[in-house]
Amino acid sequence: MTEAATRSDASEPTTPLDSVDRDGHARSNVDRWFALYPAIALAALLPLGAVTPLFPVEVGVATFALGTLVIGMAHGAVDHLVPLRAASAVSLRRSVALVSVVYAILGGAVIVAFFLAPVAAFVGFIALTWLHWGQGDVAALVVAGVEHLPTSTERWLTLVVRGGLPMGVPLLGHPGEYRLVAEWMVGLFVVDAGAAAAAVDPVFTPETRLAVGAVMVAATLSSVGLGYARVRAGASRRGWLRDVGEVGVLWAWFLLAAPVFAIGVYFAVWHALRHVGRLVLVDRDAADAIGAGDTRGAVGRFARDAAPLTLGGFAVVAAVALAVPAGVAAPGDLLGASLVAIAAMTLPHVVVVAWLDRRQGVWRP
Figure (cartoon, rainbow, N blue to C red):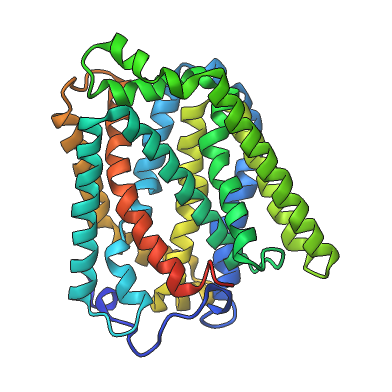
């Protein structure tokens, strides 16, 4: 860890995301490079996504692995520095110690849950990821300075929509592959493959899919309609149009693309990059760099800080793969082990991000 990375911003408390901008350009540059351009890239990939259901599922597994290697695992690997950089009077030692304890306790609890009740743990992982990915998109919209989400209620509705697009919509378009992933994860802890398949049946009934579809359609229409009402009342149309455009791209992406491929690309190109951009803004040196147009310098600083614990994340994947009762013998097993490890790291990561949300007033506009 470098000297720059260990410096606390104790003299300068974190301000709400709406006012974070180190030199007048940092926030707009972060929004452009970490949110807007990646969204355009995902839209450009829609034709490819539409044909991925014709590919073997192993293509999706390889895409997921590549996305995780490139940036997915790294996006949470600076959590130990978040309290240091986002709060006043927090030392490096305390920042690392607090986050380490949170990761050890909550991550360990998730692993235990998979051993004791794998189906319930799988459903919990889906719900938690729904929450977290919605949480990340709301923060990105606040960074972008949109005006049509002025209340916490409207932001929570946006969370339901944005998190449900990657977690719920694939259940509508491609339930077979979605179910296969569930069986891979649960099957790591249930040696009998038939028992694993039967165990996930309730998650994939027509009634469950219908309920998820109804929630997503109703939430999307409500969010779009409320946003339009805000525009009619004087909010910026540009921010609302961007929100609607992104939601449209995500609906198309997750309806058309094969689920494993779709999640692999989304994790790296969309969710992880937006969170990295947010962390750049709370790191004074990185914010100064990107504000001056040095995006490469800001990304390089983040990559250097994230490298040690990114490798640690892959060590967690290896540990899970070695510990599961059924063993890991195929690409699907490896994907399942990776997702269990990611679940163990997601819960403490959500706690850290929720703390950052509170510091920055994301839910108290």
